[in-house]
Length: 579
Image 1 (tube, rainbow, N blue to C red):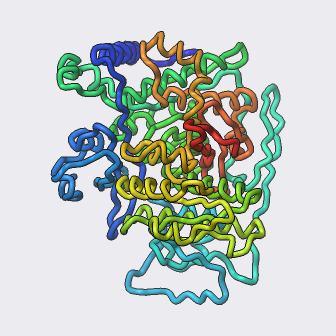
Image 2 (tube, rainbow, N blue to C red):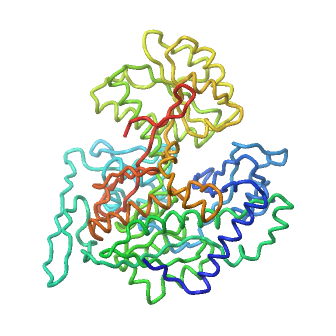
Image 3 (cartoon, rainbow, N blue to C red):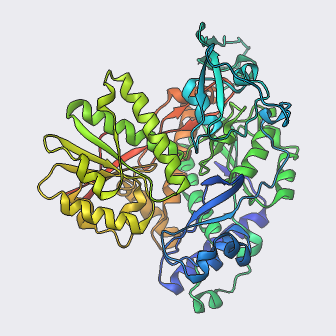
């Protein structure tokens, strides 16, 4: 295996290792990882990043993380002038750096002075719920963008709540045909045959199996700024080491370790590292315009959506698979079957939570109640609407009647009113408001004494300072998560290896990097490069990550929906056996 980088980058990377180690050693504390939020919401016609403040995180550090001024934060969030607390959500400006990457649907001509009259008596249609995305609708109805454009006059991808989208004529049913790509016999060259279901044959290029592959890994190490840090000043001011370089280093160590374990006489990886941040537009252009770009067999990164979209469009021209390791936005997969992302969306987490509840009540019937959104939280309202719709649709498929569906209740008073003593009761709370959750959890635990009651919701509820762990244990609290957070012991040998390099325990990004490389590169080794066209057929549980890809249509890339369900049991957090 070779790390194909120039001497300067190699020296910088070694210096980065040393710098991180010294910072950790002097401060005698672990780094607190700060990551950018991928939660984008439209409020009053404008898009914002919704950031949840972490414990110990200041507005100043947030302003640096997102490259916005403190004045901008105060203007958007006047309440922050009175102070902030962990768990609080704030709005930040959402900036699209590369405005040339416009979805194909935006090219449709629209007349703002004309409203089309839609006769729904002849068509099946969908009414857009708040928080729904075009991608989720396409996936739900197994439609393509092209199909929606053909049937909807003046269609635009900027969908709004309440908008009616025609799906198909009621007298006809959509038939999705499978396409089989045949093997081409080439002298002295092996090509693996792929039976492609729901993949456009016009976009496919069968590739030969080789013994040597060129891989590009793009991470924001930020060598130029990081290597000039004053360590004494950082320690004096109790400043944590910059987040992105720390994240990138851990991810790289895990990624490289996986490559080392896969390397064999008939399988070698030439890994080329690129220190590119999402704001480095010139470096991104240099990368995609380089003469060597077309020679890559696979690209991993960048971490953020905007820069990933730019590079993925160029990669598509050369039929190069590209993987997004951390971004949650699935819009980066539109019109590119070579793109895949491994971090499930929040809606994928909600779907898994609903599926888990439905699977459990098939055996033991239960009274399921959805707690009404706290005040007018737009995000929570969107999550609740989506959860209820998905839950109801899935429940119908099991043959259950409408009376078996979940009940909307408001606060602890509603929970008590609709509680049923003759069966199990499951309360679903999708709130992230710490004040509400603290009060609700406390009162529900008191009410639940000697009753069969469970509570479920988001994982961050279990991390809130004021939410009593005793109550969560009593309520058998369960939640979905994209990583197997209780299984780090499976990496004992890898952790020892990491400690020899860094002298501290790794962050989760080390495990993510290792699992990502093991999944993709092991499949590359065993199945050949054409496996990327059928990722949805290769479900896999790694030690920390579950890969379960969905592929909504022939033009869209692959979205990982693999999720774990965890629950409190006897004062321990355990992973359920649900898949």
